Structure formats: structure tokens, C-alpha cells
Amino acid sequence: MKVGTDGILLAAWLNLANAKRILDVGTGTGLISLIMAQRGEGKLSIDAIDIDADACEQAKLNVANSPWAGTINVTLSSMQTHQPPYAYDLIVSNPPYFPAGQQFDEKRQLARHSGSLNAEQFFAALKKLCHANTELALVLPCDVADLWQQHALSNNWCLIHQAEVQSLPNKPAIRRLMRFSQHASLSPKQEQILIYQEDRTYSKQYVELCRELYLKM
Image (cartoon, rainbow, N blue to C red; front, top):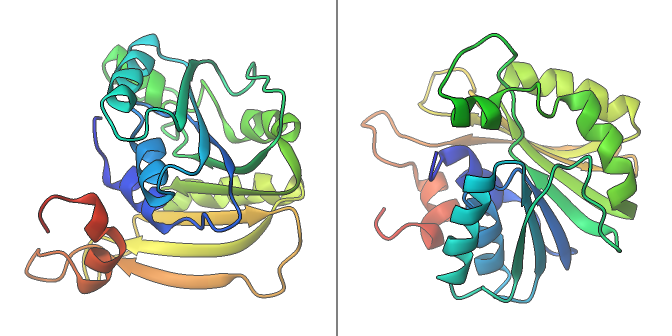
């Protein structure tokens, strides 16, 4: 789980224009935070939290060895217990989504099972971390995303932008990127993102979105 396409897509796609202070929930090895710091050219203030001690140590090492060591603060904390002295402009997460019952090794199970942070817990914890203009950005499998969107709406978070992600042409979408605001949007922006062309090379769209994040594409 060092580098995943979900995290790359979310961090490359989200809008940082109005974000100065950001929270990365479930940072893992710090991938999303590092990409945001790169895109923000070191001008952002990013708090990265995770409940796994080993992941936090890896994230701290990755941050320390990056050009943005002064931009990202990694903390061992759950979203529910995180208590910053300020609110965030943007909250970003690649949240756990496998339902309890599926079995993986212990670390992967902690990172991916929704028992550690389900949608209801997420939106309850979100309230104390926001100001009126905070935005939220998530990446989830499409079927799980439907449930999270329902919880978002019931907690007064309105969808303002979403992208359905396809791995290949003529295949159903596998992921959904979503941006939410606490202000209603009459016409949320909708788009499609294709990762691979039929010959399994990266699509032009994916290259344009992520070219700054890969050594070779």
C-alpha cells in the first residue's frame, strides 16, 4: 500500500485554489499529503493523521526526505480524537471502505476496513474540524460512494464536483472522486477520467492530470 492510483488521482484532481490549511485523514505513507505539498509549491500547511503507528513513522520519514518537510505535520491520531486549535479549508481522505468480515493481513485490515472509520463516524467527526467554507474531497469505489453521498447530504454537505474513473474504455467506472461543500450547488460539475487506453498505455487525459507525479509516463 505504498503508492496507489486512488491516492494519486485524488491528490492530482482536487482543487487547491482556496486551501491554505489542509487535513489528510488516513494519510498512510503520506502520499496524498506529499502530492498536495508539491502542487502547492510548499505554500500550504498540511496536517496528516493516521491511526497506525508504523504508517505514521513511514510518512514522517517520507516527509523528512522530501522538499516539503516544513509543510506537512504527521500525527498519530484518529479523526475522532484529532483536536487542532483551528479549522481546515480542505479535508481530504481516501477512507476505509471494505466492510467488516473481509480478511487481510492485520495492517491492511486496519487501513481498509470501515469498522475503524465508517461514513457515519466520519461525518460526525468532521463537524469540529470545519469552518463555513471548508471543502471535503474523497475517493471511493462507486457503490460505496453512493452510501457516503447519502451520509454527506444528511449532514448538509453538497456535492459540487465528481469524476467517475474508468480503468479501460467500455468498462464500468471503478472509482468516484468527489468534492463537497457546505453551500448548495445547483449543477455539480460532472466528468469522466480514463486511466488506460485499449492498448494498456496511459490515456492522454491521465497523463495530463498526473504527469508531474511520475518519473516516467
